Length: 492
Image (cartoon, rainbow, N blue to C red):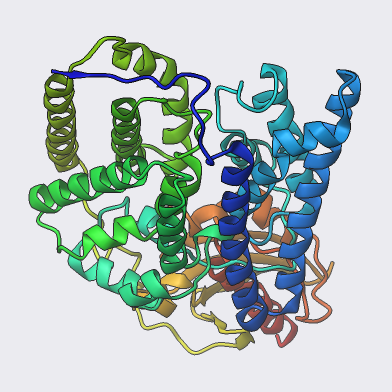
């Protein structure tokens, strides 16, 4: 047995809260700067400027909110801001968001997360949940529609993996990798994702820096990511997947960012070393459970919030004042990881991995060449043989290249578009065959997207429509189909 030593309050150390938050701010700013520079170069100034404005709004709202809080409590504003570190929450929240979240959403989420997850508990050091994680959950649940329409987004590693139910066959995994630049790009490169998740290498370097500076406990990122790796390895064994499945799980989504900047929050995770290991392992298990078996596209955010709620129970379990049962903890932790990995791995046997060639509606006769209208890289092709006319109503059948056609060598999407030529307006648009990624691109089948075409004039084919966040290519296939149908009817 070994004695558990507790440091007295008069113990001197240079590791102050201010120094910890300063180093953390530096690491966060490096991550933000690297992503923003890449966005300016590769996505254009509009997105780069918008991302900077997101950060400015979030930090400003955080400082104003905590200043008002200080006034209400009759405390010095400057001292409150210096000891509350609200800007750290604001920066983390922005880094967790996609580039097209509008400024109202980021401002409202910053205010609500600070009030609901921090200030009502008494301020910094008293909160139960990670405030930034609460803010991201609020954006997901309350402000998902608050996006900037003219800032397009495309498929991300997380959305691609989610489209495969975080499994997929060898063929679909290889195809998914190729569309996003391959495994090396997932690790070294930048790609469409949340702002803070774009470059895994930068996140790893930030993690090393924070560990060396003793800002974060190395146990949390190591055991968190290690647990995910072990479970992914178990899935590989049980499902017969390629070993390349493991880096796909690690480097997609918010795992690295969450393990480095969110799960390591010293306020909302256990204080003991063994407790933090339990916390990290729990986050890893929940992340994989949510990814594989839940409806959410990601598991990092909610796994951390759930473990935040369990922190008091973990603290109570690990609190040994005189004798620390190291052997008992090692046995329990080993069993937890092994049982979790084997349990989740075997559980995946109930999931059918998606095939690279899903069943589709194949026409019984060749598709005849029709009117082709180019919408960026999407093409709409009218099939005159299947299209019909009833009085003034034209029912036009159009096939348009979507995400599946462009990247997976599958058939295009198929649309049925009804146009009233006498009224010169579109009556309805329906997706009759969908061949893009399920759970992502199929948002274009929702009435909220399709209804925007109703009543549009067919005086020309220069229509505009809002794309769906995360389903940009699928949205453009629908727009291309409508344009092709308009051109076809006007030519009759």
